[in-house]
Length: 439
Image 1: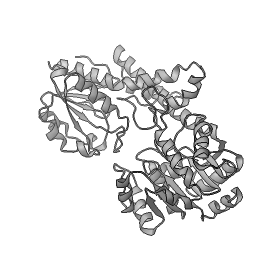
Image 2 (image 1 turned 135 degrees about the vertical axis):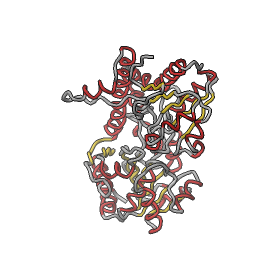
Image 3 (image 1 turned 30 degrees about the vertical axis):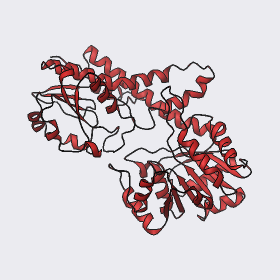
Image 4 (image 1 turned 180 degrees about the vertical axis):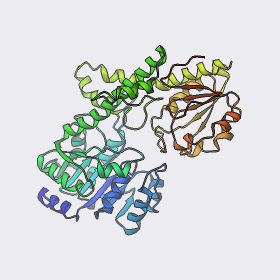
């Protein structure tokens, strides 16, 4: 099948779409395309996840508006089928890949899941298939890894027997469907003709700009936009540390800074988590670092944000000292274990860093999170016998807590707020990140 025929089949929705990876990106992608009228095959190596999806039940918990209902609908109507068997992908005219692309301990790209998906896909690609990687990639990866691996695994040549594109996702937990539909996308094709075919695909579901580009531009845009956010969060966090040191209040400072035209100081906090921001800046700089380009700002921002959970431990230590309790003998309630409020996503959560740091000091830690099964429970009951509470995630349920009831359960009225989510409390030793404290 030639590119013109493929383009036509995409436009009239007769093309079959395969989606590899049924996680936070791939599952909603499969659902919105199925709802739009395409025949969609979802592929994942986790049989339990596939069984759940096949039953019309979303494996993604937390507050995810509309996803569970949409999944149930498209499974029931037959628009979405799922499998663990790559052989079924032979019928697909277009295949998107949405698998994790983390970095290793040395901040280098770790493409094990992507490589595995490509090697499994290669032997079953039909002639003329369009392969679109939606996972975030270091600049240059489409040509240096995706293309040669697929060519080697398939025995086919890109541009002749199959086509390549990169359309990085722009979703986030809590807004998966909304972002898929209403946030613009960069469509980077190996050639302008491939880009045009990609735009004809995504216009079925995206009600925002679809910007044409080449592969490396698409790679750069996605990694740069997340690095930009990381650097700006690091600035807010550093200002918060300065405010604590000199007697200021970062929250008042931020409000007044943002009254100046063109300023948008972001929110400081207890740390940056999730699958994207902690690693995408490293993806952005990886190839340039290999070529000897001096990279200074982005690594510095990463260090600031990575150390914020440790700063939370410092604030806790100081607050406990006010009531005469040593942190290494304390029992601490950690409120929130996900990286984002009202989500079940624990990937790279700052809470994991805090908990590990506390346990290394001998501190006993009790973890509560309403969205993580192993940490669910009645908050006040779990607070019984704890010396302090630390707010790491601003879940809505925490904003509604009866703090007098919580105070009565704790051994000491110590509360450290890493998200500025709790109003000033009388009778507490109450520390908030970015605010100076006078005993």
